Image (cartoon, rainbow, N blue to C red; front, side, top):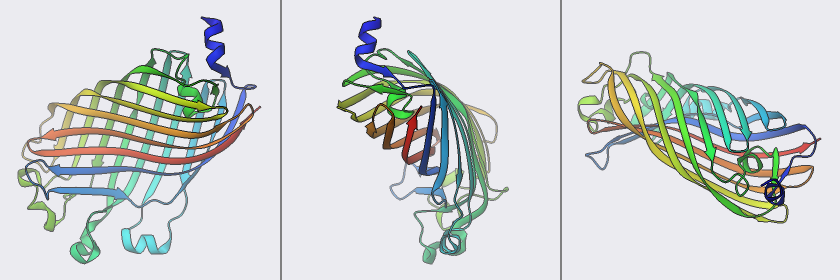
Length: 300
């Protein structure tokens, strides 16, 4: 087994990793009326690029990023948003652990034009947070390395794939200071739950999927797709049923990465999408995390 692992994976050179990055991240809220083709709203924070850094030792890494100041034009057209992000990743052989704490304030309806909604489409007091973690089990780490593709603490030298299972625990909250998140012109499209002003979603579930990496010398392309179901304790304000409801949510986690992963230096681009979809009557609520990142770094 040891020789087989060494054939496919090479531990990172040295113990210390430094990985500056620039990214565009959002934690947005998509809402749909499942019974109407026009009943959809997409609430996003208005954020600029995030500059950050990852520091790693072996398979352990800590990252921290801060968003750059918004332009005056962005603030005038979409409103002001603030954002902070803290993440810890720990990958070792068969297992991987992600811990995250994401906080946003200031949203706008991205599908509504100013001429249609006026300033109503801005939600400067709306807050949204996501706190939790994912625990991965990779069935064939000798063929597919999460470390190599998403934290660069390892090098994968041959193409391969692996089936993956993932346990998820998180808590997502959003609130708009007691006011509905949908403005007057949209509420008629969403029925009895159109006065929704906030919710707490506590989710416990699992997903299954596959990760695939294509390697050509020190260049690589990787994709990972996981889907599953979760139990969710859902409590909301401004809807017909304000008691805590036990619901079933759908989970979807997608990642892609490509770039150069040499013996010392590395660089690349990655994208991540993480969705939790809950259905309350005919009302679908879908908090979605997205991230696009460019990075460059070295191992010592």
